[in-house]
Image (cartoon, rainbow, N blue to C red):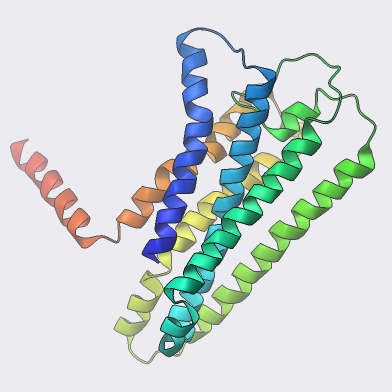
Length: 254
């Protein structure tokens, strides 16, 4: 789990560093400019890190499934080599997906200006500037995206159904609480990641507005990567003890 957490932290750091520094630079210098190549690089890196995060969260779900449903086989099924192979597969698939999406997006001719409605380059905003009629290619990539996301989502749901069934079979309440508590951080991070993404991309067009789109973009691109380390660190007893001591010290001073 700590090996996968390291990879998840790298993906979180990468996604924030892809969008936030450029947005801060533009805000400080009162500009909204980004070069064509810079926009392509930003889109590729953002899709790469976001895709890697979803892949890693799916792999971490399998880690939780094996640890709770097949604990005696954990060392065999999730040895160091198996973990390295799964992490490498997650990063490699994210790289290929990001390359495919970036190449397809920037191969389309742009004829509706060059002003994006977001603080970073993302696919829906770039497609709004396109005048291409290659709908079949766009539908093909959309089908691939939906298929990949749906497959991972079904795998996650199936795994957690098995996990909950195994947890409910544990006779002691303390054992059930301990087993379930190991899944809570992963569930929280996964729920935050999926809910913000679905809210941003699947909202009804009737409620769309530039200010709402901007707020949702910040919500799904910045908030989950920023909160993930905090969510997982809350299981660290030393950190919780330090936080309690800090808060109690402040309350005593007042």
